[in-house]
Image 1 (cartoon, helix red, strand yellow):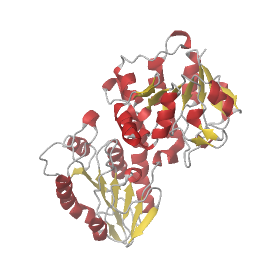
Image 2 (cartoon, one colour; image 1 turned 90 degrees about the vertical axis):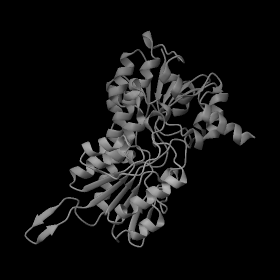
Image 3 (cartoon, one colour; image 1 turned 180 degrees about the horizontal axis):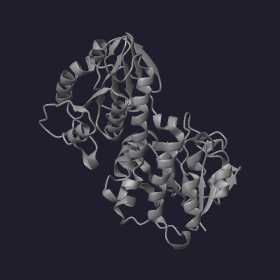
Length: 387
């Protein structure tokens, strides 16, 4: 019987858990032995008792579990574990399987260790954007949570109402919100801001986004498109500096009139494009708010700093890097379902596990396997570091 270990996350600010009682129950029913580290679900309001009730074993000696588990389920990338007094990647048994966000470009040494130990790593951020994989798309599920929270956070920090108010003391106009990037996070931020009563405009380099924006009640900021910004798998692609300059010129007037800017534009594996420049921020009114969800990748706003608040001439710029973790229960619920859906592709009868590299989803999600770094972009990064 294969042993599955659900570890407690130890990264600063990480409150999510990779499996909930709902998904653990299904794993137990599939013939797996599930170990859950004591307190793993506490920050998501999922106490140990709930896991025990569905057949999980609560583990207090995590070192033993790390070294014996056939499968480890995680949220944040493998890191140094204070309780183990060593990096988590070094504690895994040879041939183990790991599911989780891996941030491979930022953790090349960890990737190298995983390959050397023969660990099979399924990186949740690498799941291909194909129809079959929609239920496994953790990037989208977590971006959805982050987009919602970004709009709520902006409303909480803005010193005025979002909706139009007609009162005995006169009319209060609605807040104006500009969203940079119409991906999953941007569209959820749009939908939430609209529900709160704001006037919302969206800028995106992918013309196909216009219909989605308008269907949610937003206004699309048209850009002079000489080429599509649509990249592989529906992601945005990196655009040239000339296009970005033209985009900034058009968007600047909209930003200057905005009370809130929510920036969500990211390009996989690349530094985030700077879309909100210093002169745009200077043109905004004091009291305005910028929420930059791309702060960890360098930021869409020129003044953004990861997990810091910057006050620039009265404009408050926030750069949260893990907004999904602030809604831990629901974020964990959908993430754990993503993990389970992917895991089920590997499960055979009686809880046996098989890595079928002919499956396009498994092949696309693999980071390391059989002693090799099979994700080509990461392998090239490592070659560059070693050269």
